[in-house]
Length: 88
Image (cartoon, rainbow, N blue to C red; front, top):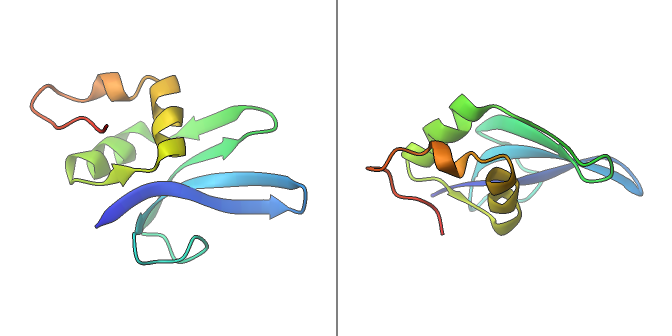
């Protein structure tokens, strides 16, 4: 199963995160299938590859809670077609 989740980067006390598509059995810092976005909680910046995110959601990937909140804030959940299953 594939999940969209955060991968920690940056330095000590200054974390930034990559939003990645990754196998659920992989560790947090493990090899990702694909990088689909970037999130900086300190500057509150996001950079999302909407096409890649929608591709993985169509294939059944499940976003984690934090990634789900980021996607809702960016209004990507509204771009899902009606015949696709929405995430919780």
